[in-house]
Length: 270
Image 1 (cartoon, rainbow, N blue to C red):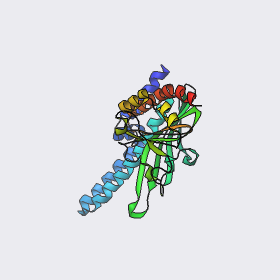
Image 2: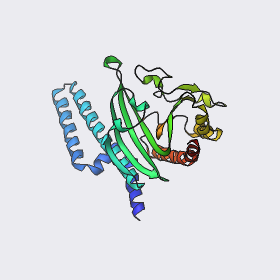
Image 3: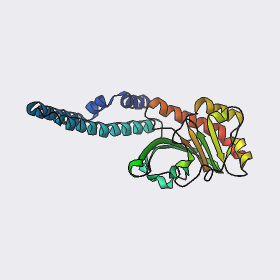
Image 4: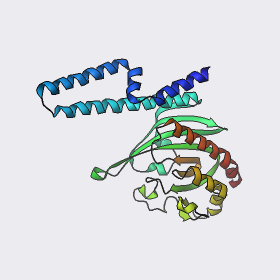
């Protein structure tokens, strides 16, 4: 009965549009927003000063942005609770041992969902950073999934050719082959979907990980994701922020299959 109630709560949040969410969970704010809108409409109509419409839309966009973030946080907290995980609003991204997440500046790590699967710690979080400065400034955001294994590896990067941000030259002052080694070509048409970067003299270990079975699974189910092995961690990088419940469930399911498939292979590399 308790699990049914939890699932109902999660479904309520994830399936509501933003206006129903505000109305149901923040009725006083709903009244306040309506009053503010009526006030500006009255000013616009009585003064016939059309530029006031700009303020009207700006205020609504501000409220919409704030409550969209509140709704997303509520959904992720319910998702974590339903699945037996923990939720944390913010953490220090500097503690994440990822080379790829050192890109840019003003880095942030938010909306962290943590747990374990088959004794392997798992973590999902949202990453945000800024690339460049001034008129060349770009904000990048995407979802990252972290798996902790027992085996320590050198840094390997598998770049999806569908992921526009997953290019190693985003590291300022770094060339493509400096941080993640050289490009290793694999069998079949796998190279049409991914580019694999490995350190010098680490080709045999990489081939033990990226077997034909693993490559087929990645091409079929994950050719939009990029991957980084570093130390005892595997990071899965989505091309953007994951917003929908179905996509969130899919990446957790996919990560679990990687734990089951890769853990025995990694043990043999020791």
